[in-house]
Length: 330
Figure 1 (cartoon, rainbow, N blue to C red):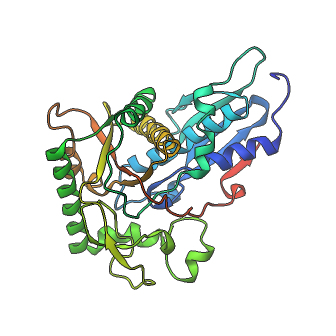
Figure 2: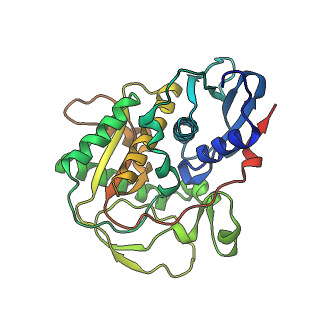
Figure 3: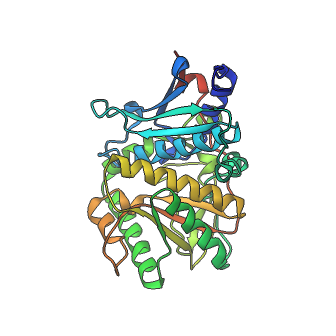
């Protein structure tokens, strides 16, 4: 197997699976290039899909690309390949985020733990709907924490007081946005309303906004803002949402890529456990607020994402760019 080249269909399929990953406002800030002779797939950041207002340092962009990288690893394992990943392989080229050698030598065994996650790639969707007021089993929490740990991250379930603090910080971020229209420029750019929602290949279409919150404390960003959209209805969300904070010890580009891989591993495990999931980075887009989300007991770690987990509808699939727009073979 080592001697033969991978066919174009196989590599294109791997990229399609990678591109099913979540990213901030579904901007899909990635590009892929396959070096045929070396059997290496390069993952690059797409700066045209950066968000200067809400993600000035590119942290969220790296997290989204890290999630795509993890999907690529899962898809490769499913295809009986052994992906060998180098993060940030060329320091002089900061847009080159990872190089993945798609090894398939005889005698090497694929990573079964990665391969078993494959069905969840297409089943995972962000849900902006209410979840049931139902506890998460302890064994499920343990599984999700172990998933984050395997990728060099920590998944922390905050206690009542800490969770209330995080919810307050999210509300502070919402108030900030309401008072400063410039902070919503990125959101407006990446939401798709009316007929555009039916033909979009990126961004968040209005059919994925979910209902408006009439009551409850679940952190769900209102992508409509003050704009007129089709009637979404209002409903009560959970009063005791199950939150989890994903963090790493460091706070540089490599840490962000690890956080993205850990995030996607947690989301795929949650999907297999029949959990619905949603993400919010609202309180993390302001550095001052972000520091306050950390575990108050240890005061360490860098929080990269707030997850909401529970039992409920998984939400609709959001659009994806055609593979030909994000992939080239040389």
